[in-house]
Amino acid sequence: GVAIHLENCGKTFANGARALEPTTLHIERGETVVFLGPSGCGKTTMLRIIAGLETPDAGGRVRFGDEDVTDTPIERRNVGMVFQSYALFPNMNVAENIGYGLKIRGVGAVERAKRVAELVKLTHIEGLEGRSIDQLSGGQRQRVALARAVAARPRVLLLDEPLTALDALLRERLRGELNSLLRELGITSVYVTHDQAEAMTLGDRIVVMSKGAIAQIGTPRDIYLTPANRYVAEFVGAANVVEAACRDGGLILPGGILPIAGATPGPAIAMIRPESWSIVPADAATLTGRVETVIFVGDRQRVSIAGAAAKPILVDAPNGLIIAPGDVVGLTAPPDAIRILPG
Ligand code: ADP
Ligand code: MG
Image (cartoon, rainbow, N blue to C red; front, side, top):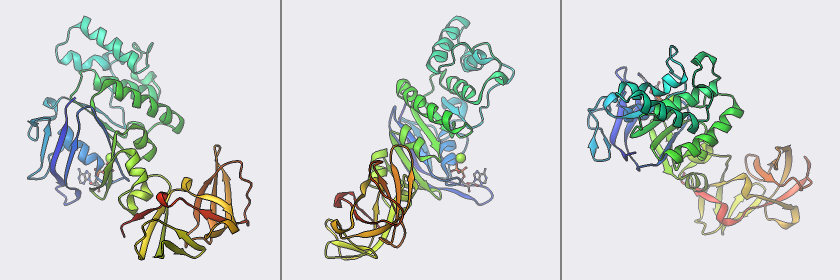
């Protein structure tokens, strides 16, 4: 793998659509970076600029390591690609699909068979080598597509929503498999998704995008624990975003006062994740509210509490907590779990 450098890469299409603001981004060698954001925010455009399927607007440069590839066509960039639609060759069987890139590079039959066998094992499709593509399930097709993409040891692996077309259970399993596979391969990879759970699982770093621009770059931990702004906080994970006045070391809320550390007096936007709250007896807290709903989600209960803030607050409570709609309860959160966001 090689490092990928985008310098000032923007994209305005011929019809005037501004898909990507001029963007600078550095991806390290061997790293997996996820582009995360809602549909239409420019993820695919940025990926296609890396691939060479799209030219950046004037002034934009793309480098692979020290090599400027801005004017290098896709077939000479040595990138592997996997898309949402499998794009496999229907007239070839599984082994032929995987070996295709090696064949056109002149790799001999013996060497090719050896490499295909390795890839079949790596992607867990043993026994399917002779099958035709229409005899495969969606998950199997995506494994073949992945094996084919990495067969010729590309410098960069680019994946655009490869799991989106699969059902939820399979998606979750393949997500875990892909994580180990990408680590095993050690290829510099860029993975595009609108699914935050996928981004968290797969990314060494996540690039959160909004309207053609980068909203934040960071490790999954950074993005989740210290979102740069309200957009990131609400897009990644469940967030309680609370608007309040800050006075005397606390946020003044409809249901009382929530103590915070190092508070600057004035209007504030605070974010507290559901797992950071504790539900305590009403007389043991300076902030109270009334339980609205209690939903059992398996490993915990998701409780909605009204009246504490302007909007209901979501709290993750342990299953052992006995609680019912109508109960008046106290809410506490450790001051270091309360993140003040820029307005
Ligand atoms: P994402 O992958 O995040 O869903 P895209 O990069 O595909 O977003 O698209 C970003 C924006 O650019 C969208 O508004 C889309 O409609 C527009 N767009 C993408 N490709 C083209 C194109 N070839 N011509 C015109 N507009 C395009
Ligand atoms: Mg896309």
